Image 1 (tube, rainbow, N blue to C red):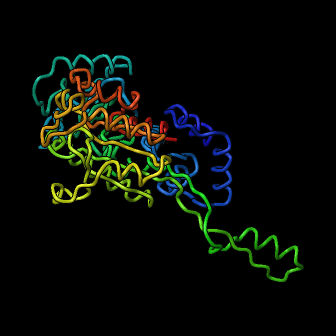
Image 2: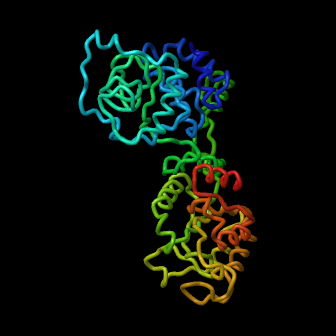
Image 3: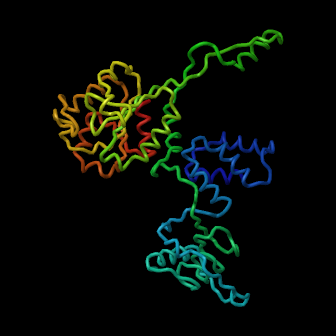
Length: 390
């Protein structure tokens, strides 16, 4: 059984190996779990999945193998919710059930379902043909058919469905979905690098055991420096204007990064980087910080991340006096060049949909200024950016 389950997990592109399968077998031999599917789910996911980004794939594989919930080739997500709401339930006698004929094969079911999806325009209830509820159609919920596809019904009633399509309620961690704070933390952890430094403040348990054994059982305590996050991050957030549309995702990123890095500094700017930045938006006009001071304060080994949509008039980047808020003596491109020449690793995360980038000259200009290291603010884009910073 475990081999078939392992193969199913691999089919869903979860990168587990035989080493993990052997670990799972060993866990079952030690009776870590016994005769409980929910406990087996937790243990098997813990052992087989090493990256949270693959949790969704594993969940689908688990549901497919143990519950018959599979990913259909047809897109059923567009079925209106009210089509599958239970409003009445038809009670059929045994004789009536005997008269209901199955379509005959899975291929015929799938072919017919595809036709229904193209043709159906409204809700149906109690019928024998369309996707609906409370009837004898092979497609839908809360009805009866000797051989059908259950859609939108949370539990089995007659155990007759040969395919099940359930709406999954857990949040997807695939790379093409909108990301939240938890997803960001998963990606950001790849950027962390730990180093040991400072005074010996942490018990080195393995070294202590080995030293004590060598010392004929007399306790020989060994200490080691505490591990510290060695990565230093400097962030520049575009604020105001068109960025107001992206406040939520920027707040999520800010929260995630705060939770992952102790050596973090951040500043705000508007549209393009100029001679000053600020740390408090409420005091942005009274407590500005010279960008030259920032360059002199932070060493070149800081990882620099810009967050902004780069959506502005091109002159705001390329011309002196182009800023919409003040007269800048030097063009924004000059200040961007100074920053990219000072720091070794600079990327730009753009919350604007990547499909829209070609329509903005300013985005193309900014991409050139940062050596094309601009990535969309999606999980996949964040992972690409982190690889660039490493």
